[in-house]
Image (cartoon, rainbow, N blue to C red):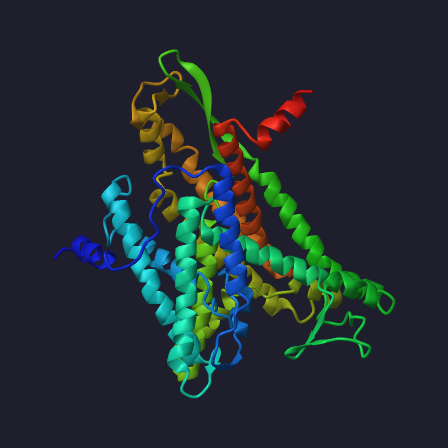
Length: 468
């Protein structure tokens, strides 16, 4: 039995979300996306039954990126889905598994394999979280805790499938954006000071204690009288750096290179835009998932006390983790005693950039956005370059001047941008801000395209108002 036949036989027993016979209307797609994010938030507030404690400080920085919430049934979040994608991308990218993504059957095979692998990894990661001690089950509850966490991740897998077929974009992106946005809002405006496992209120119960665990805005005003400079650095800098990253990402979302093309028999002039963020946000998601799994692997090996492997993974885990609040420490302490942390930050940025470039190149090939695939698409659509022969090889030669270069530069740029924000301790983390802005921007573009294609609804009204 061939591998394709084996996967096909297994897929018959795995439930799937049936694709709609007709494309849902805009309002329906928005409703599906809205309900998916609501279900995600509900799952993130359902605690795992049968545990006595939960702690995963090594993975805290990655919780938003992986749409997870330690201690709830989405403890592992979208981790299994992303890891499955990483593994298969590596197999395809290294030609160990030869697939042609322009072939419908090969694409279906890849998607089925990814789904099966993600389900298996949901149980595996749930087992690791419980076994390592990130979740501490009550006596006799090991299996039930594992089952709840695995099912939570599988639910996210199917919600992602629902959003892809009936909503806008992907569920994974939607969950990340929702998690990051809620985290940013809570960290800035939370009126509650968290102490231990409860919430610390004033003795009267009528007012809130704006202490060290409360929102940055409230802490800024509370600490303003005691130390103006320190209050600004500790409480406003994370917000300021987050805003800087936000505006940089928004600006570069509109940066692109126009390649002139002609269309049809009339040789109507047009342009093929290549965006600066050609690689989108996927390389950063994959890099974050990879780094999170390195931290997870280190936690496993450390508990098993394997000396050589523990030491190697300690350094790898250290240099794939951003030293948070480096900017704050530099402002308050100067360079004295921080050279080791600065070196860690530089190595982290280099490793993150290399990883994002690798995944960026892989994504461009797999998504059919490389020079060869785009040139064939343009040729089939009756488009060609003015002044050149109507040959896809000629178009590819011109595209090779732009796409590979902008893929590498764009991947490095998003890596440095995300890494810089992580190092400065920006609210929402650098990766979180970058992904959220990119996700929301692309969701907006997709909604606008949908409105234009239907030529109705709010956009038409806005256009008419603008004309007046």
